[in-house]
Image (cartoon, rainbow, N blue to C red; front, side):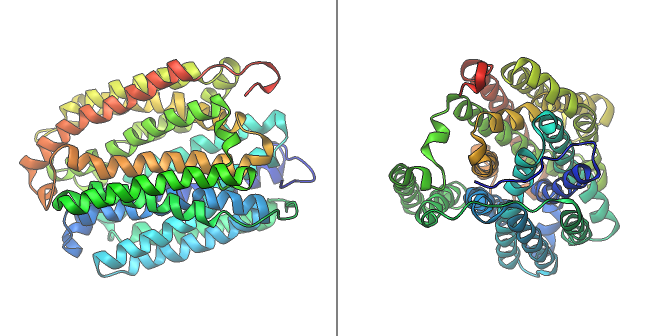
Length: 469
């Protein structure tokens, strides 16, 4: 277990500095999860990529992050969260520079995979620093602020990326990470207290990490590329099933030495909130992937205008996350999660109006506001609830698990949506084909939000007294 000598208070300079470091670093990772979507048409044109190349540009990052974020959390628990966090920030930044300098689709995908590896180190560490570093009475407020500002980075990505693409080039969406990383490292070295990890116990669960990565990678391949060859699809699905079964067996055998200790998912609340996470983040990523491209290719918006379309969502997350964190702490996560997911689904359905002659005020703004209200209501309780349901000695692993589940949901959505709506080859460049695919995708995305709401209503409950799991 990692321990921090003196718990931080949010009102202190060290507390605010620690929060700043966590927000800047995780904000880079979240921003890169969405900013690339705005650049996809430009990347496709510049690098002559088809829809599969664009999917792998998004999914290479998500795959590495989802597969290794648990490993990153375990590294932090063993060797110190501050140390692993700093390594992750440096790694992520170097990979970002490599993304901006690439000249081919294959090289860009490889750099995105490396970027995801760095994000897998810094992302669980940023949240675990808050969960174990702050005094209990300030923890919910710190996490609520982190959720709002980091979530804001995720949805601000299309807006900021659009401005950079129009003013400079798509490459600058990656170069932007360098100054943010410098600030994050400086704040970490100045304000984040060093933690004391316990003596290492046993070997790392390399087999579990490898099997999890193979399972996710095989599923992704089956959805993105396997549809062009039936034998390849069947083989990829078989590999995914075998790897997933092997992962479960290895984790059960290793017990608390596992990358994903079974006792975490023995806690019903932890398992239930992660089910909601899959559906919510699949919907978020599906919407980001389809909407911004639709606005540019079909509606004729420039990159900046397409990114600005989601600005209301950003502002609502920024202004409301502390309130929603306090609400979740007072009444439990079930109602905020279910209600927020239903509101977000209504917002997605309102965006069905987007098409060839889209006007912002009647066609985009109502949906963006409803989706923003829904996400504001659910993001902070989702994050705080999953950590509250886990024991403190597994805070890093729990944070990593939550992130892995979210990225896995995003990964599967981006891989599956084009297949589900019949978008392939260079169809994303053809307005008629893309418009038809977008309107089919709206129903899938809203359905994912509603599935999350149903899971929250049926499975998530208000925690009982004395930290009942």
